[in-house]
Amino acid sequence: SDQETAWAGAFANLVRDWSLTVRDDVGFRCADTEAVLTKVQPEIVFVDHIQQTHKAHGLSEYESLSAETYAWRQVALQRKIPVVLLSQLNRTGESEEAEPLASSLKGTGVLEQVADFVWLIFWTLVPERAEGMQLIPAHWEPRLRVAKSRPGQRGTRRLVFDGPRLHFEYNDTVIQKP
Image 1: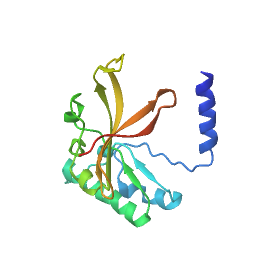
Image 2: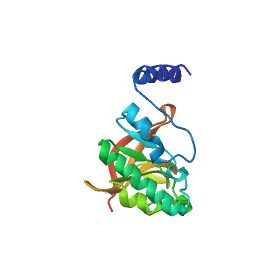
Image 3: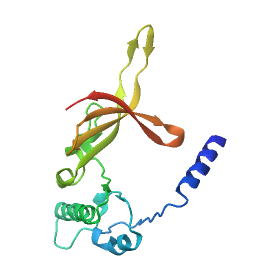
Image 4: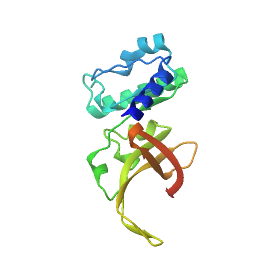
């Protein structure tokens, strides 16, 4: 659509001068990125699918993932930059009735242990309800669960999803505090 084309153009102008390096190889290790980090000097690092990191010889999957998590923590501390590790949820986090917990992160408890923040974005089914004279049908809503925050408050908050822009906006409404 014209709106999507205009948005894409505006976004391209916004990020035109950004330095973006993408490594799209499965099985990488934190140690493999040192040369890239030194050359690029990023202000932030995103690691998608942390569970896809290389399994070190002689170590279990749990031990390898733990070692990688601690290695990325060291990168953050030494370089004084945020490192965002993106993780899948394990199958127990797929229930429509339950909100995911920090323990729902796939792989190892070290992700929760090492993190300063654990944010879980999920969709929940809001049941049909009456508001005054109007009946609001059941619908899906995005939520942000702050499952861990070393310096601040935890809880679940509403998000607003802008589909055409694939964008979540923060709604300050606190739904539940732990």
